[in-house]
Image 1 (spheres, rainbow, N blue to C red):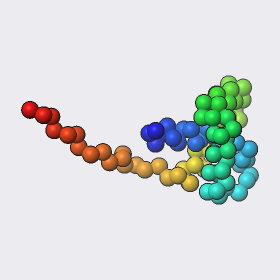
Image 2: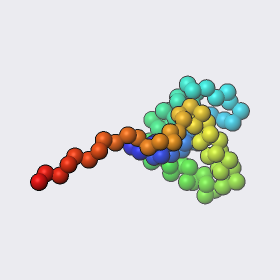
Image 3: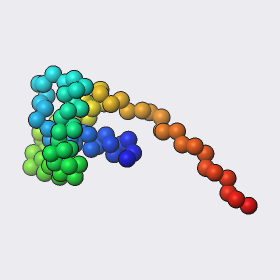
Image 4: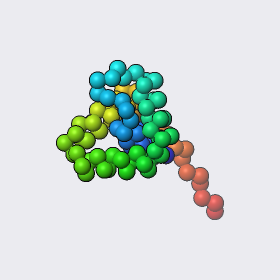
Length: 93
């Protein structure tokens, strides 16, 4: 899974978790919340719940998603360099 997609799944999972803005966020709290949400709802279920929340309460959903992404990036830093890929094999003559 590409890093951006993995970050999206994690953000949606944290978004739908029971963790609140006021909770003390540690790496363990965030990781456990993400894993718990994915186990409970699945990646697709988390995504569906986020979409429903943005549809019903966009004024609350947008700040929560920004919070979730920020919390995740403090735990799982985003690399600014693309992953190393070996050069393609030469074509046979």
